[in-house]
Length: 80
Image (cartoon, rainbow, N blue to C red; front, top):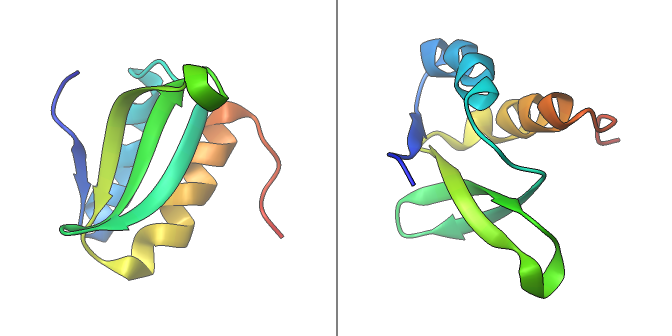
C-alpha cells in the first residue's frame, strides 16, 4: 500500500480523479478518525473486504465532493 492521498484544498480535489485512476478498488467506506474523515478504498465485500488505499480529508467541506468523485470513478450513480 502506498501513501494515503491527503485532501485539504481545492487543488487536491482537482487532482483526485487522476490519482484514483492509478488505484485498484471496487468498494469504499467512510469513517471519522483521529486525523479527520477518511475514505477507505478496498477490494471484495463483507468479510472479504481488503483495504488497498485511503483518502484522508482534512477539511470536512470536501467530503461530499470527494465521495462523488469516488462514486463516479466506480461508475456508481450519485447519492441523492
